[in-house]
Image 1 (cartoon, helix red, strand yellow):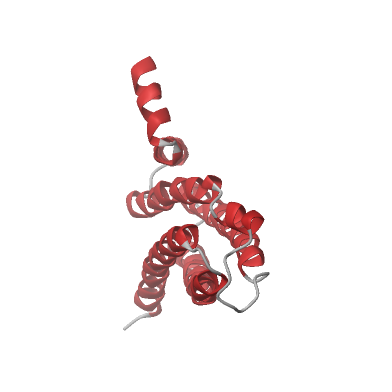
Image 2 (cartoon, helix red, strand yellow; image 1 turned 45 degrees about the vertical axis):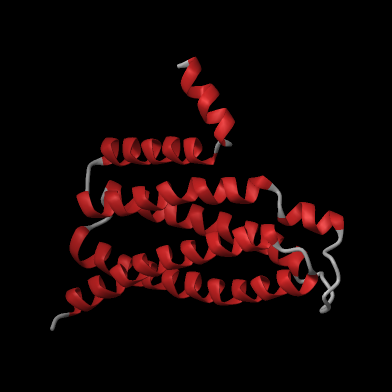
Length: 183
C-alpha cells in the first residue's frame, strides 16, 4: 500500500463526510423549523454539535490529503485551485450560518415552554433553508471537477452551472413557476 492510495482514500472519505454533514444539516434545519418548544429546539440544537464535528473532520480529510495529492501528484491545476476555493467558501458560509442558528437555539432555557416568537421566527427564516439548498449543487460541482479534472474554463462553467441549479432549487415553488413561465 502506498501513500498516494491512503491519501486518496482519506480525501474521498472527507467528501463522503461532507455529504453526511450536509444531510445532517438539512435534517436539523427542517426539524428546528417545526420545533414548538424550547426542549424540542434544544434536542435538534444538540445535534448541531455532532454535525460540526462531522464537518470539521471532513474538512480536514479533504484539505490535508488534498494538499498532499496536489503537491505530489496533480500539481496546482485550475480544478484543484477552484475546488479548494469553493471548499473554503462553503465551509466559511456554513460556519457563519451555523453559528447564527446555534446562537438562537442555545439562547433558549432548558424547559418545555413554547419558543419565544422572535427566536421561532429566526429559526424558521426561509433564508437558512434557501442557502442550504444552494450549497448542495455547489458541493456536487466540486465533486464533478475533482472527478473530471477539467481546465480552468470548464471548472468555472461547472461551478456556474452548479450555482444556477442551486439558485433554482432555493427559490420558493411559486417563484420557480413564475421564472419558468417568463422564460
